[in-house]
Length: 385
Image (tube, rainbow, N blue to C red; front, side):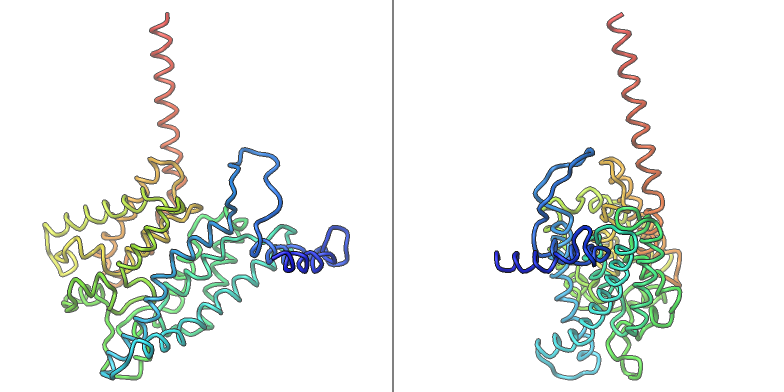
């Protein structure tokens, strides 16, 4: 490692302060801090002193995403060969999925990081680390056959409008990955909805009907999948959102490492379960009659509540606020599913809506705490008087 350290130090000399290529120092420093822990610490301000920097936090989230991603790659091939009625092996399915998904990940990182590097150089600050996660999340929540240029345009919109326009990492109001998906959904609706987009190479094959469970229910039909298929994820859907099992593995990693908020996750489950139970009492249509516990396993709910709603920048910050925020995400997710047949998957819109209201939630939580402490102070003064 000392050899690599010395080589990097030599490479960085022309980019040092006062040197010819000083303007491009943020780009070089980004590679340095990606490979090595930064050799400097916070000098001022009320910051927590810790051995773990932001890059290591982001890498933890990437590791938590890997189980769902790996299964999503396999499931992409599994859905393709199963719908065609062809025999296949695990490796056949995995390689087919990798051929579809890896290029999407490459495009996402290349476009997103190019914009991040350009803004860092232009503004003269270090490259932010947040896109390490966003760059992986965006392909994971897209349909498998969306054209790569659409992925690139969606990424550019999310980074430019959803993030850099607000000041970069730590300043964005909306979750950047969901901003990319929302842009793609409204800009290219034919590539983001329908029965064919969820199964690889299904558009030109009449025999394939890769309708999602929520899509079938919205049309008043039973999708015909059993509980294990829903939980394990062997169903059509966005690339890495189908397997609740592997998403739970990622959730455990986030919770045990302290990176993800268990309050938001549990709050989301409580809110969704409550609304699901409430609608089950009425049972007017197929989505209302769909068992509440199955609502938690299908669509993007599990993935959204674990990896999107817990975004530390766009989510609520206070402990009580996280409970309120999570519960409302769950409530609105099921409400949108049931009342909007044109868009039965509600978790994206629910999280984006609550991203907007998260600062308001924290504001009122803090104000309530201040008022409560003032009352205690007044009570203490009366007692001592």
